[in-house]
Length: 286
Image (cartoon, rainbow, N blue to C red; front, side, top):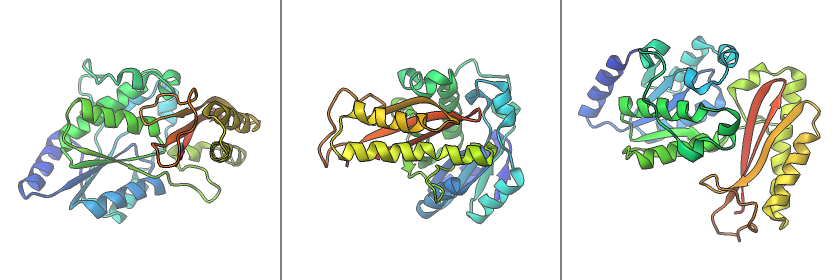
């Protein structure tokens, strides 16, 4: 694996691969890599001759400086994970390298998709996501970028970014990887105490209960209530939202569940456990 830390090095590396016609897959990460990232890397490895992984904790995605400072970092383990996954190029820039003049004056506005749900609770978060992803796509020029479905809103924003700004790249969403008890893998999980870790499983239990209600014919608004009630029953969890949306993040709570075979909906939930924001989602309606 070749590790590069500057945009100039990355451009030179990618130019050499493109000159020989190699297909390229990109997996953008913020480090603290876990089995969910490994699944993304494996998917890219299966499909492309060259796999590029970025490791960059993007300050533009954090509303609070203390949250940024506490974000888990483990560069040594990250390198081991990437090498084990046979990654060809690791791009690990500094903040000054990515934003040499400080936070960029020109940034990508995700529009209404970035102001709801997570965007409502974390103002500016998706402008940070969209801006850094656009920079990575411009530097790497991959054939496809691989993102986890756990961050479903992020996946929707990136798909729209690629479509609206005409980036010639596929966006591949990969299934959420979970612990045996159903907890969605997240770098933030490492900050939970044992009690908080146990409480965090309420999100997945709530989604399963909502999906069961959906299959039983409950309307989406009722399914949202089921999810919200289950999370709220956990004393250590503070619910932010529980919603049913389509693949454009539009609410489906005013319409009946779609028949089998129609476009599915997705239940999304967010809660705070021990001061740590957790999100999860589950597809329903198939």
